[in-house]
Length: 369
Image 1 (cartoon, helix red, strand yellow):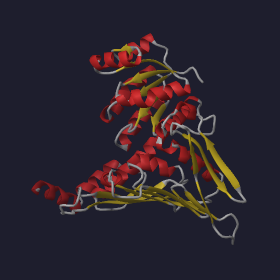
Image 2 (cartoon, helix red, strand yellow):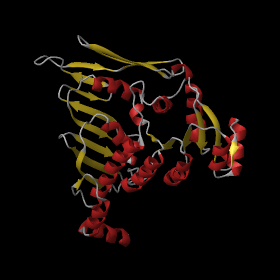
Image 3 (cartoon, helix red, strand yellow):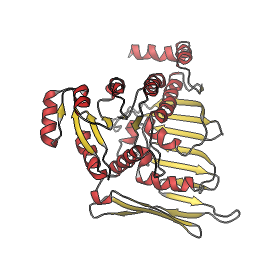
Image 4 (cartoon, rainbow, N blue to C red):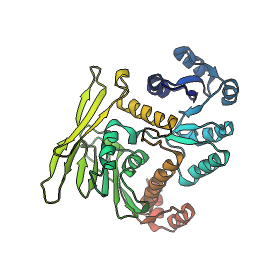
């Protein structure tokens, strides 16, 4: 339990259904909230018992707040954070902080000048199975990781954040191409679009990122898979194949998941015979939090404790790295898979895009449609 006091910006369903149970579980106090609509604010206050303020200024003046948590529409994230910086309190913002490296850096730079700590609620690296897999990674079970493959399992910056925690190098260059399948048959539910990217890192490792909204939401497309490849072991979703000693045969083992009666993840374990047993116990199992809520609780606790338990918080600087990769992928797409280098020079890439034949060809084709 802790005595941190939170001020909420927003009053949507996500705060009510996702965050409030987490706050109760980890023992933080929600001092109040503000939202743009007084009518919605009044309803939310009546439903939750939380005190409503008609502005962040009014809330900050009346309350002793330790953290602001922002859960508003994506397009408003950057402007809301910019307005909150003047209060000098740590801010936790839902993804995305902004949609470009340059805009994200502007916010981070301003926060640094004002001495404000800025965190992003990127929960995907904190899901229970990721916390167990991280134990293996930190213990050297994989050896040097040379590739991570996000195979339709994680959207854009979520998938990148999840994968990058297993890669030690810095991004060097990326090639990405979007493939539009024109199926044209009455049986087709949609015309799928796949983004396929290859990110090379400074140490030679690679991040392969494949994602499609149509695939991810499809009843017939499978699997949604996440894989880590190392010199001593590889792990595809729950299954690990590992060689303990040089010359010995690979051992195959899988994550064993134990649930509470309510269906909450209680315990995860993975045993590597003749080597070691790995266990993750859910500290929030008694509160019946979902896996996503458990990830949020883990991330919030890492922020409040400043990573004292060994789990580091996801900062705005971490988000800058991930959105830079995502943005570079999209730029490469517009240039028909051209190689885009890091650090990303946005002005240079805008010029190269305007000089690209494929860019103007696609513009003309869209106009003709």
